[in-house]
Image (cartoon, rainbow, N blue to C red; front, side, top):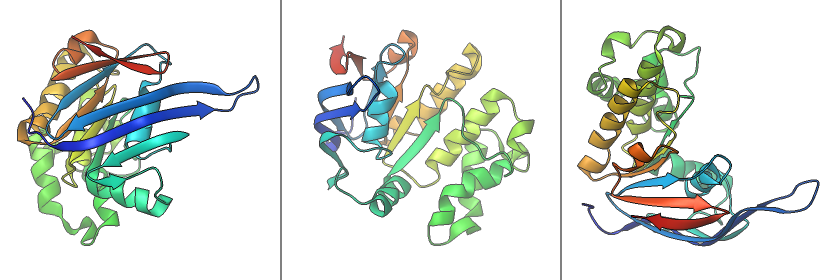
Length: 228
């Protein structure tokens, strides 16, 4: 089911936040290996640490302790400039709330990650190809406020793929969608990630969505458990 070969690993990762009543351990001694081409679903109740773990694995935050390695490169000791490079070159993100820039057109939103690469916004052909794949080219010059929820998420998927990432993180990508649009978004994510050798890590509370994955993990009390 997977292409094999390690892409992402976490070794004894913990995350502790200071609070007024003392330290709060959100993640406790987590170890995880994700091979290339795997579709992994991470389940858990609200507040269980799912999004915190995703943020650590994606280099958006740093663990309190432990090691995280992506494509052979340790993330946890990297300075922020180098973490930004890794996120730009190797990772795509799809969020529940879309995170589209409201003042930019759909096309400009999709091209936005390219602004930090050589060639910048000039790669129109690639952006057009992705928008055609997600059936949004006819909306290319619309603003996000003119789109439906399903269209916004499809635009976000195109943006996540524009840099040809090895790994796509999707945090509750269907949470704001009805069931029909949710299925379409999941189909698009699978078609453009695991079915062509990319890795997909999806956070969800929905067991029906998680059932589509190659492997499911459940997070509870800061620890990971496999699910059948």
